[in-house]
Amino acid sequence: MKYFNLLVVLIAFSLSASASTQTNNVKNMCSQVVGRWKGEIQIPNLPNTFQKWDAIYRSNGTTIVKFQYQVDGEYSEDIEKGTWGCLNNVLFKHHTNVADDGTRKYKLHHVGKNKMVYTIMTTEEPWNKLKFVSYRVK
Image 1: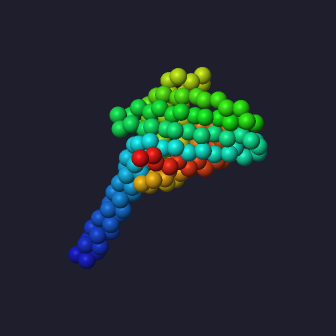
Image 2: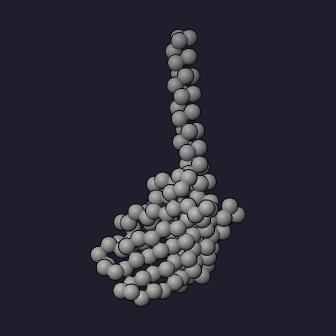
């Protein structure tokens, strides 16, 4: 019986350590978002349509994103300001100066030292099918 109790304690400790590691990985991925990121994408099925962004995520929870759009050779710009947070590999943003409710949600797939990969969770096709890649600006 003594060995059975020891085995139960070891299994419980192992599961606890595993859960702690998973939680720490989430925290580490979210904490890596702080900084300045740039990226661009050509929109599938829309020839000559591009989007570029320059995003700043501050440690105080504020964000500003400058978007540049090119559609058939014509350019436009938009700036979104607001707040952000991150939990369980999901990045939440709320922009206060946009026409809709301003809430955005992104699934983080990778956040490293120089590269972030994510998908949009709160919009319609084709946007929610795209993988976005941003690169850290130093």
